Length: 259
Image 1 (cartoon, rainbow, N blue to C red):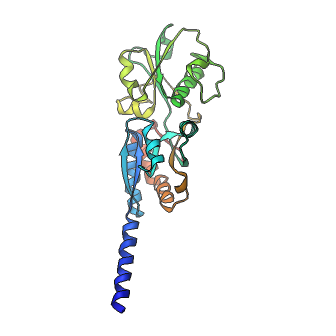
Image 2: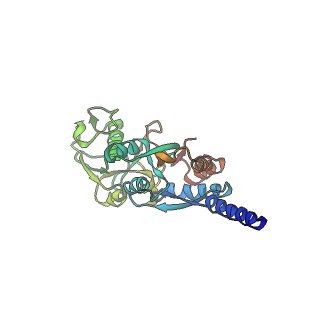
Image 3: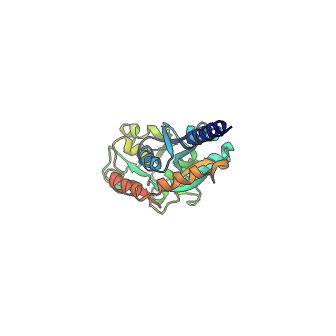
């Protein structure tokens, strides 16, 4: 009987060990989100949480994968984008923490400054509704166009009230925007794709979004997991002094920690 009790105890401990060592899959996009999450992975490992960091090349799949259970969390999007995805696709996912701000910027291979933008210039923006609206709000803020409502985070090209310089605004996949710079006069590009293409938001952009814009990035999980212990550990690891220092040292102002 004693042997059976001891064997059962060891089996329970083994099972607990397996559960404790369970790996959580975290979806990210290439660039800052992936780089930062690799640092978070180091910190989380010291707290008993193993992270498998999985990169996605677009903005759509990570939320679908999270909703379907193929991921346990993701870290790649700002809150307005998540809100739009939940509203449009019915995902049962929520944000559980803020992480970084990556101000959107405008770049050009043909122009040296905003003052050089000619009438009739072709300007490329992201083609997904949330980031497209973000780019249009930036153009409005810079006085290049005027929107019907410059507080509407779902603005589209159809909401342009005034385009006095007759800009040709085209919508392209966000990941393709850096490659479009050879063909357009100006492109408004998300920071992760800009950095991946070797562009510096601080040194290379013609103008940049204000850090007061409502586009802080978030960590998202399925609603059923929002209070899970591993989620708390993930957030603690991300919001650590070590990760903040890494962000500041690595990106030198192009990416801003918000905790």
